[in-house]
Amino acid sequence: MVAMLRRLWTARAWTRRPGTRVFAALVLTFALAAAATAANNSVTGQKKEEGGFQTAAPYAILIDAETGTVLYEKAADTPTAPSSLLKLMTAEVVFNEIKAGRVTLDQEFQVSEDAWRRGGAPSHTSSMFAPIHSRVRVEDLLRGLIIQSGNDAAIALAEGIAGNERSFGEMATRRAREIGLTRSTFGNATGLPDPANQVTMRELAKLAQHIIRTYPEFYSIYGEREFTWNKIRQLNRNPLLPLNIGADGMKTGFTADGGYGLVGSAVQNGLRLIVAINGLKTAKDRADEGKRLLDWGFSGFEARPLFADGQVIGDAKVFGGAQGSVPLIADKAVSVLVPKNTTDRISARIVYTGPVRAPVAEGQRIGRLRVIRGDNVTLEVPLKASESVEVGNLPQRAVDVVTEVVIGWLKAGFSRI
Image (cartoon, rainbow, N blue to C red; front, side, top):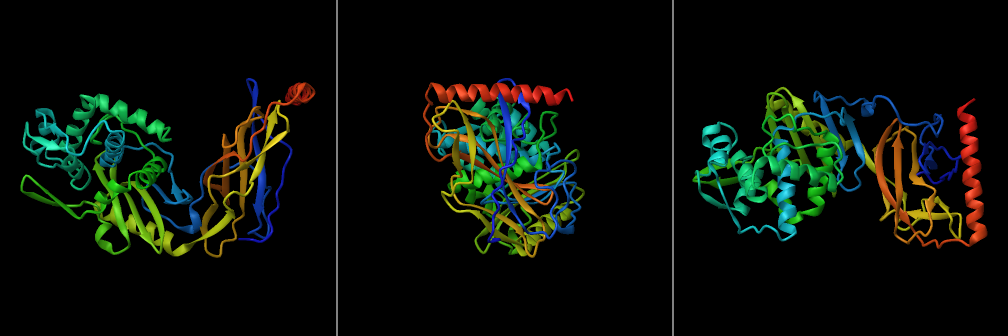
């Protein structure tokens, strides 16, 4: 890490909202380029493709699983049909139900006629080949879903948990919001064509990261090479698993409207990367591009520490408090992966809605640290108060009120110039 950090507090940049302002305070700049552009420029416009790397995938992202650092992105926020990649969300809902104690691995769900007809042998789609009206343990349905990409397994799980597949899709969308996926929507449990099925590669990568972190006891299923059910042996459809690149998950998908897609994860030398791609023309393209992105990430990046565990990153302005600001820290040490021998400028901003009203509790979530490399936002880290701030006395509160009124007048005056 560059030895010298310049902790810069610029004049506050704000936009009016009813009763509040959104602050974007620049807190540090790493001098990695001889000539950096203005440090407080906002990040807008088309994302640059990293380091000259190009992929044939229309939609792609590569992230560090530990920090969420974005190593590469291409149309990563464009909604696209997920095909069977949607089954990652189906599995997450099931995992969560099991963790909450509402479903057990030994519980049996029936394979309805609808599940059999639309997802089983008559459907001529990827199937677990569970017989009609058979009862199958949740643990086996999960393997059918994950390893064999069985549409019959997906529908049986959806019906067993939510009563019908449409209700399960609504449940999956609500659950997506709970884990921070704000744009993806789900109309069914299979990923078969449905206008409600829309995901972005960024959110699929976040979903994969969430599953790996939250359900290690289930994640190992994604690396199992085969599964036999109803005397039919099927190999795991993930083309990365046999390539000796450290791959141990996660899911492939294909429909005519979505093209060929892949969410993959691999570990080398303690570093785990997650790749999400979609819209490719052939299964070979999918495998080739997934491997290329992972190889590029493993060979071309190194970790740069930014802040130590517990180190104060910046401050947030407090309204009506015994002190005018509160120090902010992250939950753990903050580091970012950067290209080896890079000349890109790395900067970071604290973004929060403020001023924060007193009282402020120690550990209270205040905002986030946004790390920018070149023109791309590569990492966002939640920030919290490192100490408590009590409500101030009457003179202190009066000064804050006057300050807010004056700032409001100034803002209104500048807007008319």
